[in-house]
Amino acid sequence: MKQGEGDMATEYFEKVLFELAKKGEQDKVKFLKSLYRRIMPSQFERIKKNDKSVFAELFMPKWVTWELLKAWAEGFEVPGKGKTCILCESKNENGLDFNDRFICESCFVRLKQLE
Image 1 (cartoon, rainbow, N blue to C red):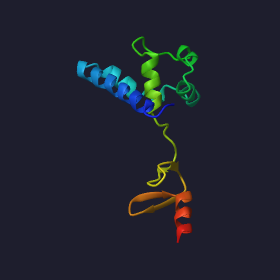
Image 2: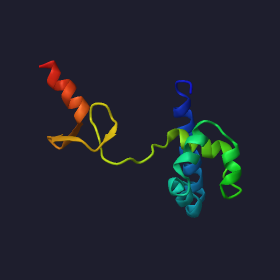
Image 3: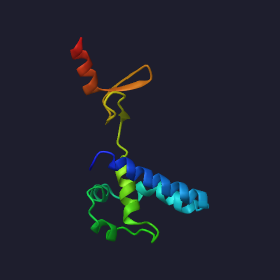
């Protein structure tokens, strides 16, 4: 993916959400916001790789286009287990909380080595 491409895709998805909300189509907005529940992780990865064959496998309303689905996938982060590290921004279960902030184990080890 080119630099900035994900930002444009996210902007497109947010623009569509805003337009739908502005038109008062709350059912469509709710559908798009809960899209991650309808798509399996393997399908999510295929969407990110621009595999259009996955679109045929999904039962989407006619108003959901491939471009919209792709834009959603580019800007969506798969929910993972654990907390988000304040240094590397990755999800991790192992680490420590310091001043109400989470530092993952690998970042903590790197910081300790700097001493």
